[in-house]
Amino acid sequence: MRANFIFSEVWIGLRRNLTMTIAVVITVAVGMAMLGVGLMINAQVGMMKGYWDDKVEVSVFLCTKGSAMESCKGKEVSNAQKEALNTLIKGTPGVKEVFFEDQSAAYQNFQKLYATNKALVSTAKVEDMPQSFRIKVADPNNYKAVVQALQGQPGVSQVLDQAQLVGPFFEMLDKLAFYALAVAIILVLAAALLIGNTVRLSAFNRRRETGIMRLVGASNLYIQLPFVMEGVIAGLIGGVFAAVILIVTKVFLFEELGKYLGDATAQLGWNDVAQTITITMVIGVVICVLASFVTLRRYLRV
Amino acid sequence: MIHFDNVTKVYANQNRPALDHVSVDVDKGEFVFLVGPSGSGKSTFLRLVLKEERPNSGAIHVAGKDLARLSNFKVPHLRRRIGCVFQDFRLLPNKNVYENVAFALEVIGKPRRFIRKVVPEVIELVGLEGKAHRMPDELSGGEQQRVAMARAFVNRPMILLADEPTGNIDPATSIGIMKVLDRINRTGTTVVMATHDAAIVDSMRKRVVELEDGKIVRDQSRGVYGQAY
Image 1 (cartoon, rainbow over the protein chains, first blue to last red):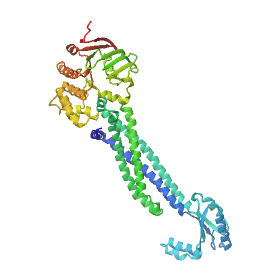
Image 2: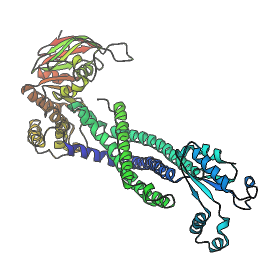
Image 3: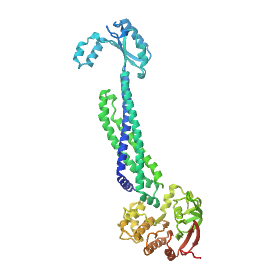
Image 4: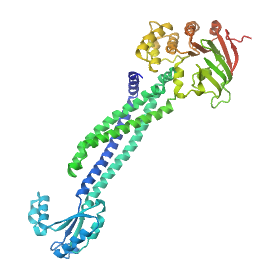
């Protein structure tokens, strides 16, 4: 097998079909980038879910004096009610751990949270802060039972579940990943058809050469390899562009996003990006090879 | 070398057979003219030898191989032992004489050292010495056919098939082509040539097989083109 002969044939083929080659490169690049971004969003969502599942807790706010909540009837929670609630919470199935946040701790948190808003901090008093039970749930997806068990108990003003707050955001990300993958599949399909057409044009352009090759007894592999290589090289170039797009996405989208949502442990690492790039490259090349072979079987009978 | 046993070939969508119960034997080193009007089955005969077509019935042996039992995978190896020349030369217009001949060896993976050695020899054998770097469009029809013959012969095939090689060439030049074919035949290569050219057949005095409507109507050693009876 003469490698330089094959490569000179491949080069001729790619140059003769330059516009088609460019079309293939662009389609593969965009398709693979969409696929990669979809995979990366999926990985990111998974990591963030893990991160938030650890953090998310159910907060049971207790009545303060003069609370506007109907269930409080304007009275502050009594110690007996707190005792009763504590035993009730501990007896509720699905509760992993519980701790009590008193008014001074709540006030400190409040000060920290609104440190920039001096006016708000100065008007709020320790007595205004609600006491609360903070509950870690064993199964973060199954917090509803805990919430229901505690809602409306005497002395409880409000039961808040943080998962409810984060949920819609994850749903949005899931949808994004789904749409990216759907677009990717369509583009991959388009890329396959384009590659098929390119190879067909190539085969037609060089039917003289292939005819002679057949005649003098060149093996099928030798005849078909230049065409398949054309598809593979176009696919690889597209894959390299896709890799660049993925790296840019990681730096400018995921890292920026990560700053707002969780710490470094919830960050998509470079090894995840490398893995995604490898997967998209392999898929891209495999599709190019398949598209080339299927087309050649039809247009280059040996 | 070529053995046809009761071979019939009917192309799809045609009811008349292209070859009709043909049996013929061509021995090693023979020179055979295949004559007959257009559509008599000459080209079909050559295509069957190359296994470009399959017979509907009958057995074909080429170079000791039963073609019916030859897997598709091995067909290229069969074709390496058969050289082919056509009426329309089939040269690559963007390659010069040397490259056109070398192409046949490159695509079957021969080493470059070997190619550099044998290609000039063959170019000389067909009488094109000094023209190795000409492009096909700088050559006359006769010279182009010589290039095609060099390409067909460069791998030293056991059989050379020629489908009307003088069909596009004037009679004076054709004599030169026939001399090259004769030279190739003298190296021990079996030559089968399909032709319409009566003058050439008459002058060579070789074996003549005449086909008509897919049937062999005459098989004569040292024959002539026209009917002998």
